[in-house]
Length: 538
Image (cartoon, rainbow, N blue to C red):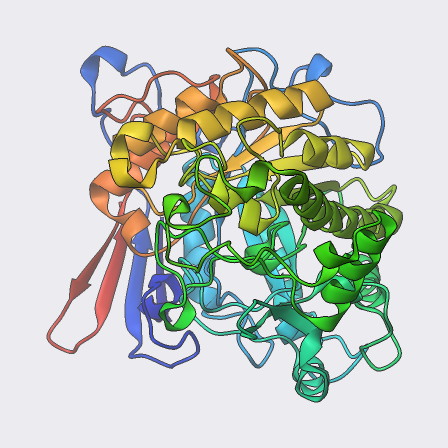
């Protein structure tokens, strides 16, 4: 089979200075041919298997359709469906599907590899950019139809945050212009640190219930957006669109923007800073302190918590026996983390009310903040809003809140090993993942995973396979790979992905160096004399 397309490599190239520049076109020639198995001793698999989807047992299918099919990964042999994140600029600033022919070719390849589906950010800043309640879903509608045509499933992210300024952000998509106009009139609508630095990534949770968006509260604006999405895609929900991930903070994660990379504000492994200095958060803190009978505690966040790039022992608050473990520290951290939980609860309640009965699952994402996990205070987690210390579990309350709304707990850094991290950062991604697995098991909530950083090597895939099992704590109900780009389709990288998808479908066997699907499917790029590029899928 052969297909000739003219499109652009920028669609799967994530290091453009601007995601909406128009680069040179290239000629993409795509063909699929049966190949000999790459390992003779395991040649029983044929290329025809690549078009088969992993079957679900009756025991894995929930009889309730409240949020669609529930895949329980409680046994080591359970299937773990794999999704791939699409490029951040899948839809253009003009609201159109970006490079549709290249997308079509990519989806065809992913289907051939046995991938379950793809994930896409549905940006608030694109869909509602022309004015309040004025929605443009057309670019996403074209994508949904294309995904359906290839027999894939779709996870959509209600992305109420800006794109740009964080790890992996390859383009800039701000909040809707009319929202930015309101922020310019009232800068306290966004998170603020103790130095007065405003962060425009996401609206402060302090004004969740205040009608600051032209007569609507932020929660009402998010709810209206989700309702419009439901009505536009009603015929696809639960059938093609199988999951709605509800954005609740920067990067779509339930957290404060405590470690912003833009302009060099923060650098790994800095502790970050508390984000509680807009007038709405300050008013809440003052009220909480007064209710405790100690007004002095409501005058602002901790004065000795240091700066973004510092380490715990350089501060009075986060050091080994610091203020974090005093009566005041416990008060502040309970208030700060409690506000984040309330924010999540409000948005998820709205999402549940909106998507109830559609057949689509709900999920929400929590950040994998693994640096300084080996210290007593877990400083970087605290500034992000997770009250997790050596003496206090910060993830069980989140898991319990997700369980209340029947929301899948999506967690990152599933590919990381402790031994790969710098010793000076006191990292323990493996310890963190294990804690989250236990918390979600205790709360009886599904756990899904992502990789935090781009990885193409067998070692990264092997760690995900090991993490996916339920040897202790929850296993994974699904895994979403970050991210579809040009490098993914290169020879060894593609073979590793194909092998990984197959192993996940078989319950997480160890990844090998050979391709057991009996295919050498890959995409390569060749520059010719006319500065055109040929992509060959063979």
